[in-house]
Length: 368
Image 1 (cartoon, helix red, strand yellow):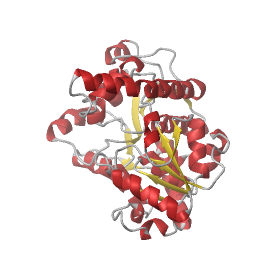
Image 2 (cartoon, rainbow, N blue to C red; image 1 turned 180 degrees about the vertical axis):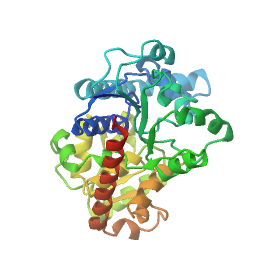
Image 3 (cartoon, one colour; image 1 turned 90 degrees about the vertical axis):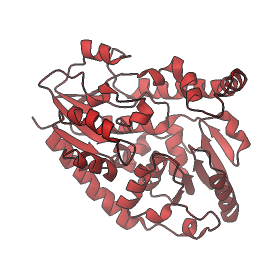
């Protein structure tokens, strides 16, 4: 049996490629041949990345002078991202031999498989995708073929009425749907569509699997790891003060070399294998990232979370599911929450049950 998966593997960040890797491993464990559709939407194509990042920055996209400054600063970082993530995909992920750059190309020459799957991550987030991206709803799939969704995410807690009306007929074509967040299950329920909430693939894959992939230890001292995707001065100050209080070296894992001006020793766009190692060996982690939180939980780390201004429902969902709501930092003048020790025994019991739930869903979904 062969399954064709479309997901966000081309987005240049660690979470995207790691959930792709975890999805591949999960299907391989089930003795299913898996191939990922090498689809690159326009704003993720390498030659468009600088423009994409600039378009998302209101501060720098104001006039020709600020745009020039931004491009000068960002170019080296984007070049490094392209190298790091494209290397990982080439080395580890089973991709279609043909690279698709549009829905029309997919429709004209769809990959051949027994089952077609929308993979994990924010595949149905119209804000990130620049609208309703039909490929992520499997609209190119030949008639009569089974369609499923594996830990898909809308990335937000609700859809506009217009978006609901547009996506409902697309989602009704799926045989079975699983979503990553409880908010996604609620969105589908409001459309009259059944779904199952399951873990993100990076949590379904166990620690032993990740240890096989990770690089050797990167930092010899005891350290607090920062993995921060959004600007937040309170976050910076809190992490700096907490590291000083606990006598931990402050390590900042960043995509951008110019973050050298921020508190902490910068680890600038390490390899994916090194990224995993930095999480595994950290003595404490502070993050505003969903996958940063997921790996902290999976590796049983002491951690704190800052909710980002947008798309925080996925963070709230995983903390609620694992009973770790108190790891969210609300009072930046108080270290009591950060200093409380997580008892991972009940958390790991929850993860074990949720992994069984995901296994049951997939077994039923791929059954002929």
